[in-house]
Image (cartoon, rainbow, N blue to C red; front, side, top):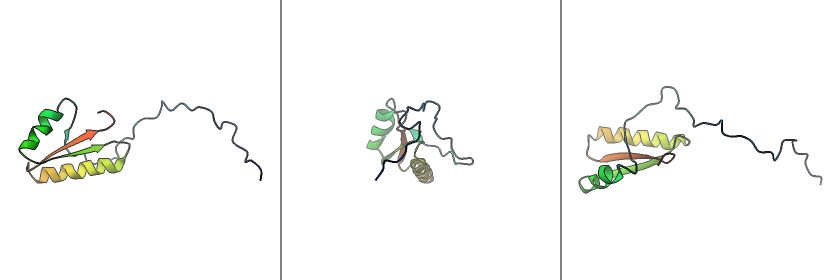
Length: 94
């Protein structure tokens, strides 16, 4: 059995700095939600959890299904008119 011939540039380094985060799909819904950050976590979520249920979702734009989940839960939270609090944590920035 012979060793397969590899391409000439195989094993060389590639500059990935030009890659960016994917852009949202055209017409994608921009559902409102409260972003959970280090700065507001205690005041907006932990303190609020003493009064009503709090639901947090971690998401990233690199995984479109997590963005879809975030938007779906944000829609449900807005339909429930404040009976529970929803926050989303962007794992790329937090």
